[in-house]
Length: 310
Image 1 (cartoon, rainbow, N blue to C red):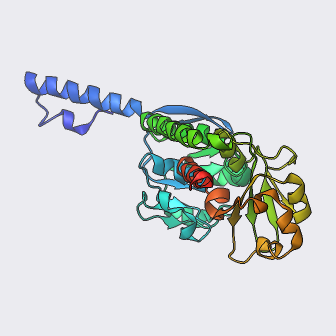
Image 2: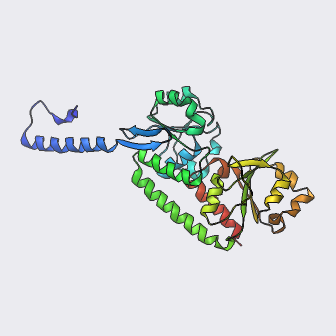
Image 3: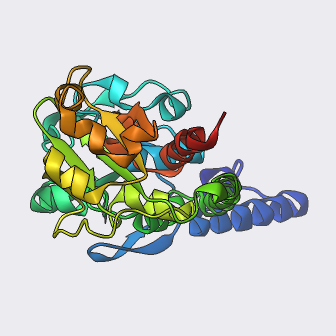
């Protein structure tokens, strides 16, 4: 079907005809430029228009969108908007919560009339068919992704939303910034850095193949080699932390009073090399453990640079 503005009163003079042909060519090229195919976790994903109403079901997807100036209309924010880190939220317009990441509300999601849903292969594969009935659904890793996985997903998202060039430029900027941080951290080469989340009744150490571990390695630092497990993070006790004995301990506090608060009162706590050297740093647990992404990684790197700041 041709655009309706090609004809005026049913009669076209030569000038009008030439102008109409130019408009038609521009219209066709514009339409065709939005037709893209990417590889997601299910195989090939194709979309033939540039999505404008996007719903993101993981924080890392929101981060990727914000990195190229795109604000989703809906976010699975766990019913807590404060979980969107300031570096991301300040780039967003108003959004509507669609519930938790583990169980988003399909009813609320559908009411937003999205033209693209970005979902997590780990959390949302079971409801993929329901999501796909609402809008085309791009399925990517998030919950169990590595740092490298995250950058790859960001590139896929950029292409799928018609922002491929912008995303490539932003990723290039990101890598340059991470290299700068790595150079500042060269004085810690050979030292081990352990990140863990401190909950009220448990400490969860993140291994080298976790997202946080990947950021640490990207910056030229090491994680304790002894921490091996089927999952990227696992709960450990104080004795196991002493066995890891990192040179630097980075603690992401989920609650103000947590298990580390109790450990600090125990004699064994003072055995840790990081404690004796005063190399224990407390960071935003939400940013380090929940909010993976381009912007989150840059703030994590800035936190690590504080290890060598006077």
